[in-house]
Length: 237
Image (cartoon, rainbow, N blue to C red; front, side, top):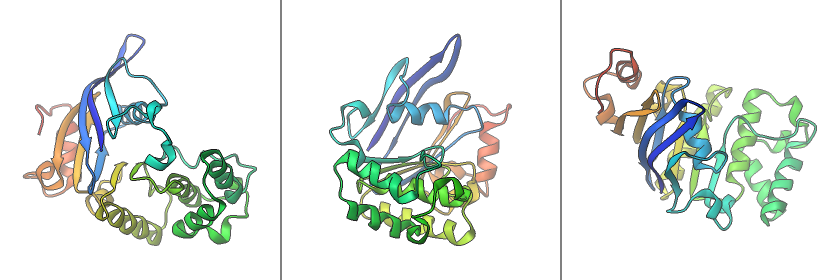
């Protein structure tokens, strides 16, 4: 389980996060939404130990990221693309990660097959399309076969077949008891994938609940999102 509790983040005189609280539960796909600058990236970076909160907590199975014994086997994350050096091949990047985590080379070939990159694994990352980079990032997130996935814009750059694949894959992942947290701007696609939704705006949670609860009287998730994040919106769901 991922537990965000009263998370506050100041950067200089600016308050980036103003008491964010929500959970992402096992067996569920949770969508994490918000306009640009709402605080989504700051929340995820704190959760994954890449930044520090001013106060509050962001816990992974009850522990901060820094206290996880082998983080790669607990939580897999894909933020801002693959993170691979452009001159490395996709396979070399994953082998480097696997070696650092004490994982076998055979797992590298497994995840390349899962994400559909086997045929491109020998090419340099710098030659990859945006969609291929997303697949490599997903492969890296899956290396440790983690019970939790945290993904930022996982379908960005993917073709329709790739989008369909990742939707099915994430639903299957949750169905086996894993936790999936997705941050994305593609609300139509999210509505096809998620069980639960968290929407933040100006560093605050403005809606949290099941997909149906957040949509409420609105016909789509997109319409609910704009109603909740408009400058005239008042109150929380």
